[in-house]
Each structure stands twice: as structure tokens, then as C-alpha cells.
Length: 137
Length: 168
Image (tube, rainbow over all chains, first blue to last red; front, side):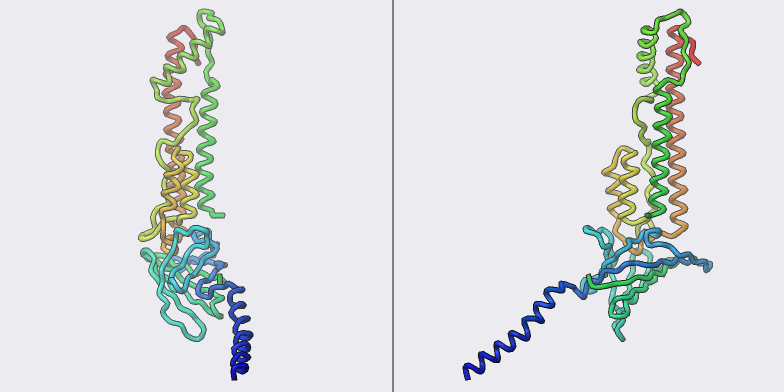
């Protein structure tokens, strides 16, 4: 009986340990996403739109979306800029975020297992549509 | 790179270059001086040196000193409820123009104090306004420098004439 118990425990350990080590080895935190902003379009109230780079509108090229802390941050060593958000809905593999930053409202959709990002940011006279690609940090 | 950062930097650099050129031209003597009473070169150098000191004191302008901006450059206008250009760019521009204004630390602090991210995104119309403000600032600073230099020139010229030199 004792021998059987020991072999059972050993089996469990053998199965469980690689799983634990694998998770530790990958080191990726699924709740923190590193996103590269690939495209920004600005549209004015009269309908004119123009394609811009992230830096043209004062956005960093890389952002971190921290789903746990509910914050978007610049992907720099010391981020001084951030924006808080709510996770409104999660359905069909999509994560929908929304927030208010200053007098701007914004919403973003993370799709394809949080690897694609599209967002819109709007104020009283213009709006931005932002596209990007994400991966766990 | 950020176009606005570039344009801001270009304005600041252009202004600095302009002022340096003006300063150098003035310091190296844009005057034609002739000793009316046949003063020696040594005497003329001495008089020039004394007149330089006197004119500097009178006009409160030193053509030999590196030019500094008399007013801080326009900062990125705060987006309603947010920031103008964001901390990164704001910080960089702050350092650039702050350094010209002789206060790099303050410039950097102004830029870095910004905290909004999406609220701080810059619209094209804001970028245009900020560029215009930068241009105006550069022109004003240039005009002030020119005015100071002109006053110095008048004072220097008066001093030299008072010592029997023809100054043109």
C-alpha cells in the first residue's frame, strides 16, 4: 500500500513539475501586453482624415496594456504617462476596454487572443483611430 | 522622429545659430574705426576695451557673452484635460529649449510633469499652433537680441567718438 502511494506521488510530481517549470520558463504575464502601434488615422469634424505615425500625434510607438492593473502605459523604463480603463466586456475572445483621459474618451478592442488592437480616441473636434499588434510582455 | 519635436528643435537651433552669428560679428568688430588724432594701435586697443566695458554697462548687453533667451520658449499647449505633446516629447523639447534659455532642468521638469497618455495626443491643429508659437518666440527673441546689440553699438560708438575716433 505504502509503495503504491509513493509511486502515485512520484507520478504526480513527474507530471506536474514540467508544467510548473514550463510556465516559469516562459515568464510571460498574459495580463500585461506589449503593443506596437502600427497605424494612426486622425479625422477632423469635417470628415477629412489623414494617416499619421504614432509619434506624430505624441503617442509612443510601444504601449503596455496592463489588464490586471487596468492601465495603459508607455513602454519605457520609467513611464510617466498612463491612462486607466475599464474592461467592459469580454466575449468571443475579444477584450473591450474603455476609458476617459482628460477630455477625451477612448475605447479599444483586443482581438485574436489579445494579439490585435484597434482603438479610437475622440475629443470635441477630432478623432483618432489607432491600430496595433500585441503580445504578452 | 517626431516632426513637431524636430520643428521645435530646428527653431531653437536656428535662433541659437542666429544669435551666435550676430554675437560673433559684433564681438569681432563690425565697426570701422579710424584714429582721428593718430592714436597708436596700442592706445586704440585700450580705448576699444574700455569702450566695450562702458557700452556693455550702459546697454546691459554683452556681445561677447553667449546669447540666452530672455523668455522661456512656449511649451506645448495643454490639451484640454490632458497634455500637449506628452511627457517624452515635452521632456525632450523642454531640455532643448530649456538649455538655450539657460534652465535645462526646469525645461525637463515641465515636460516630464505631464501624465496623460491618450488625452495628451496631439491634433494637427495643435501641432500647427505650437509651431507658430515657436516661430513667434524665435522671432521675438531675435528682435530683442537685435535691439540689445543696437543699443550696445550706439553706446560703443559714442564712447569711441568721445575719444577722438571716427566710427562707422
